[in-house]
Length: 398
Image (cartoon, rainbow, N blue to C red):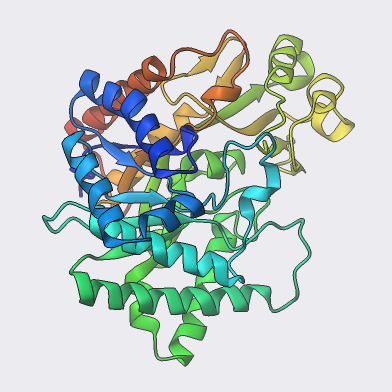
């Protein structure tokens, strides 16, 4: 029972980049600078479809990029393959879920990314991971067969990852990332999908390979926004033998007693912005969860009755993971601590990655230089991980 001994990773989807040159610029100006301050650091690369295509044009392209990373002192064992296109477009919102897992282009991009990662990974037996979209987005219109269609492609991907390992000696696992308002968002839906996936895999003679190569990316703030007990959520995944291949170390926004907390609601209104989707949940005294697909100024300043009567709101806005509070707003850092304690007690060590991609869209007064902000996040996370390692207590039975 231990936390990953690999260098802590931070996800580079915080940096714009649709060419290899732009990716290298972001890494040079930010990641290398952070590494110079904190020591050993892994880059959890986001390589959009155009970047992946460029890297695979010739073997020399990928070799040169791998050499560049080595010379920069950066290790890479995980990729974020959730955003397919431009994650820094003026408006991303629900487009981040495209293409979905029923589409060939999602499959092809993911497998291409695995081929890239196999070349970039350390040559020391380290395993790799790819985080990906949780099938699709509930507000979109899908046929009844959608989940099974996605499962079929995921089974094919698991077989391809096994073949890739046989060819390269590099094991890379897929990590499906539940997210609010997606086809897979809650722990219960995750379990339901994996049960169906395993049924189909068994019928196809591929159950063992699916269990070996497919699991989840546990984004802590996503489950916290759902008002789930994160420790119990992780225990449920353990009980179902659903492997957590990757953990996104993240925090979301909390508003306590919103009806009587005008300062917090005024502050929250400043987080309304046009680029990313900020799913918003309110929990009533009886436990009912009220939901809105995106945060709006009206929700914050003139909330509907259901939200006004809620005891607490939670908003899917990735905020700095070192922050317990943001002025009158609170964060889900307490849930992060509980989740990492539960992860520590697993009998394997998922990859650990900080994923705060919203620095560019934080309101005035919350922004800092990206290098300073990332450095503070890495240092605070390392301190938390050290505390958990030094004071082990078992929370999950295996």
